[in-house]
Length: 489
Image 1 (tube, rainbow, N blue to C red):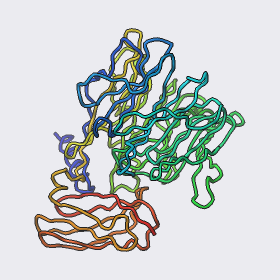
Image 2 (spheres, one colour; image 1 turned 120 degrees about the vertical axis):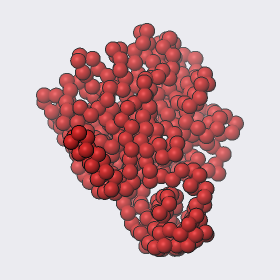
Image 3 (cartoon, rainbow, N blue to C red; image 1 turned 180 degrees about the vertical axis):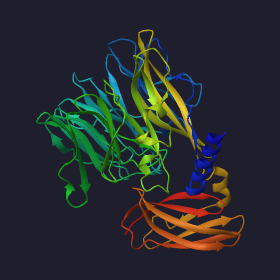
Image 4 (cartoon, one colour; image 1 turned 30 degrees about the vertical axis):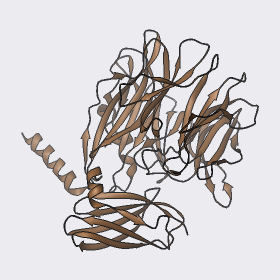
């Protein structure tokens, strides 16, 4: 009885001290098969894009033999049969990467770019196609290079990285003008795991600063490196974030929060541990748990405005051995990378071999944000993609009905000097506007106190803000709504 009362008081204290409030749904759903098990299905990813229509689509690689690999897709939330997306006889098409144009260039005839690796020329190289109302367009080569290319990764800011021989390469697709920049060598010599921040079409937060990270082997040590881009100086000299005996499986997080978070495996001479690095605070966090094998960590960042570090909210997912069997384990949403292994949940729940865990953002229903954990499981001698779903209620996000009733608009957008925030109140309410940059830093607050029922306006002075994208958050006693605003100064 005393323990129950203490627990209740702790929960009430958390609710009283923090806003917004997360309601934790710690249980993941029973595993579900996304693909068949009569062929090999690998490297699943989920994108919110405009294909047949705007929806969440799952893409993956499918092969029936060693002669060819094709890309298949289906609407994730429907019972439709999978369809072929890209296929060519006796060619392996792998590592599909999408750049959606809808959020940054909604007037474009092109819905998205599809990049992928193909061995059609006899070596692995990178190609792309655009998708428009007329469907998938003709294939083009990304560069004129004749060298082998691999480890392709793209993001919705138009940034593209890959490995070319031993070089970390970068190229920019100008989203507005649909023009490719000249490829640039970021680093060379014993490099691997090039990666970039991954802002998704389905979420605006965390566009972040241009940065490329990778692992470099030197003097029998592994170095996690990063290079940032300066508008005047170009790519800056690489900085070392971490040094260890062995580092591997480097990747940026996915998420609904800031995306400047890296995670990787690290061998400390006795066992493997997970390192999660927050670029905002320049801090590395090593897991308290360890394993005899690499754990292929993934992190999906969360969002809790009152935290000094947004970083301690989110989902960690690893491959972890328990009782002699490896499974996919995930930590609760509000524990983040600091979770003890005892709080992790066995998501895959299988005796079969598993690999390649990945975390994706799913649909939002009311206050509930849904998260999808995919992995590959060996079934009938083939790799089958399976998934499980969890959710967290973010009470700080207004529902679609709330948005229509408040009728929030911000003009002009883009803005140079004064932005006028117009909105409707169903009753008298205190109102504030919070302005955040794309790294999550609060840069301005406009507080107006109580405002009357009905149509209202307030002004935000943007003349001192640097050019870039900002998040305006309108907060009242009734709800909270956000909008993306482009400042051009």
